[in-house]
Amino acid sequence: MQQKMINSTARQINSKSVVKFLFWSVIVGLTFYFIVSKAVSYLTNGIPEYFGATLMNAELWFYLHIAGGATAILIGPLQFWKTFRLKYVQLHRTLGKIYIISSVISVLCLVRIFPREGLTPMLPSQILVTTLWFLSTIAAWWTIKRKNVKAHRQFMARSYLFAFYFVAVRMIDYVGKKFFGFTHEDKVWLANSDWAVWVVPFIILEIYQSWWLVAKVDYATKSKSS
Image 1 (cartoon, one colour):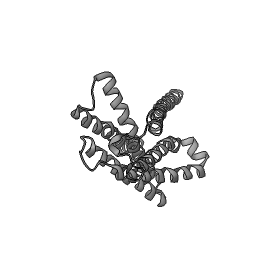
Image 2 (tube, one colour):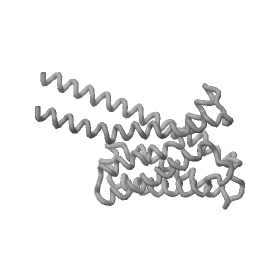
Image 3 (cartoon, helix red, strand yellow):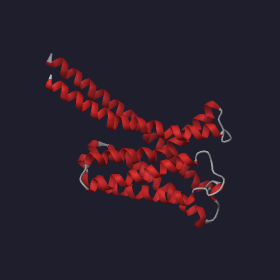
Image 4 (tube, one colour):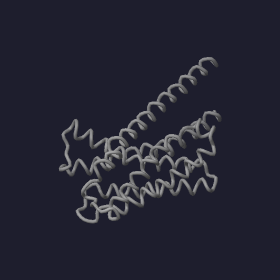
């Protein structure tokens, strides 16, 4: 009986490791694809025309936004890697500071270049996710300063999810155009996809971080008492 329990636990651990590896492989792969296909192309082809052409009016802030966001998204997976976090504690803390600074820079620059005229159907979603990215990043910094590691990790997960929106939204746009024939003229698709690409993952994250952990603790307590 005991051997069966050991084997079952080992299989669960192996399954979790495989799922985590596949999940982060996809995240890292999409991140590098975004940087190569989008971020680098901005350097060679210039920024979108609707941001304007003058350096101080748009270009400077746009490039700072891209640089800050790309840095934060690249650093994120290392911060969630448990082995790396425990083995290189000081480096983990340094990268955490860089992540926070990069995120704040990216958000503030994005606020500077948000279109003031001709509101797009995606703008409400973009404003909200950018605000949540900023607030969750500040909350992650605030909680670790007060040695609340559990809350810090939860806020970091939220912050990274909101940061990754800028990669995910371009991926879903690509899928929509490539396989379903949606275009930038389809305002309903643009609005709905923009909300769905971060709201659905956020709900899943909250269920995992809050509901599931509470239910798991309650189940473990009942099992011990029975």
